[in-house]
Length: 273
Image 1 (cartoon, rainbow, N blue to C red):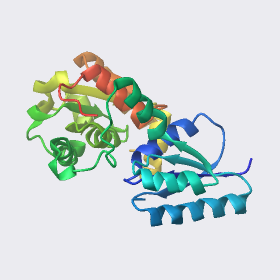
Image 2: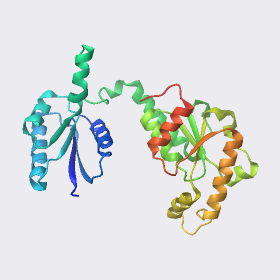
Image 3: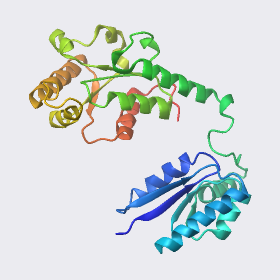
Image 4: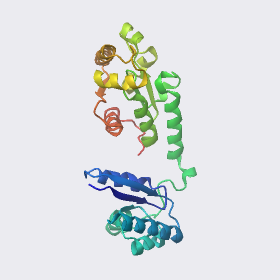
């Protein structure tokens, strides 16, 4: 199957167009080439985009797929009239029918990042990212009482990317701690975590997969050996069961699936979407 070119166009960052478009494209077994055209905020830029889309159509002999979240009607009109691609206007598909149903006009704002300096949610999100970075891999025990969630698990089980995703996507302060041989010998969670058990969520992973990941980092080491990985995973899961900690295996799950499960279980009070 030939590769199909997909354009994501927006008068803002294009994040919404790309996120929505990728979710739809995931339903099809096909190879795609992505081209991002953000900040199309003038008619001149729109004409340039049309030329690029149409040139692609001529060279490849098939219509490019164009996902749009353009709000500026002048810019959108240029695209509609001149574009030889398959245009999927997401705002036109969803916002206009909602305006009719609700009987009110939408704000027609360019992206969710407009007036960002005035957004408390944005500043909270930045604070959450800084918090998660400061509390990555057990670097700090300070202010754990303000954490929304604390992830625990063996090294390389997915704690850091999940913590950062929760911070960046949901504005949650997520700390994470590695479970290490000293914890297994004590048969107890790190002392600093004991007062915060209700916030703790555990991540585990199949030993074989853990060994593969660690081998990429430290080949031919005890750290990456399959026997050691089996021991650590077994000890960690036993400890989490003993402590009454909710946990899941990250082996076959995406970061998005892991984060969604954590949110369903922990249910933070100040969840931000």
